[in-house]
Length: 225
Image (cartoon, rainbow, N blue to C red):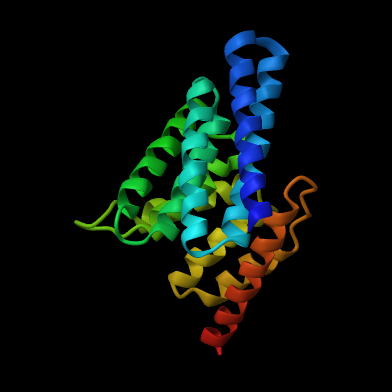
């Protein structure tokens, strides 16, 4: 636990340094490199919080991470990548926070992702579409929230078209199809997700996602009989 806390503190210091460098140097290749470094730190901390922590420690980690993701997005307002990751962090935080405050976080996630979509919908191999699709089917609809199954399907199918072999679009599409009780199609999507090539810079995220896929496949097999 102490090691985890120190790791998060170190990551925050590094991210703050990158943002300071942006403020001092301003533009060019250095600016792009600083943004990429900030994104890598956000991605790694997201994977650690999502797959290695739980309970109050997980909520605390996501609260801090949401603040840092917002700062990164604000530092690069003309780039879609930080907005995508701000949306991912906020939507995951909403899922672990519980009923109080979750919908507010989900709406902030939606707004960040739509802002990224306006800037560049193709960024990060269609992660905007994947994230919006997942958000629209996980959030309740009606008077409670903004969930919309038709919009979810549309976004997820766009994500698959843009990144047909990606682990994340196939997983979330499979999960959506499972919720829609289309078990055979869900099985195909999830099996394809397991065949996705490993990402050298996302080892922990891939490990956690593959475990989620296997767990969901077991539920699909149980439902399909």
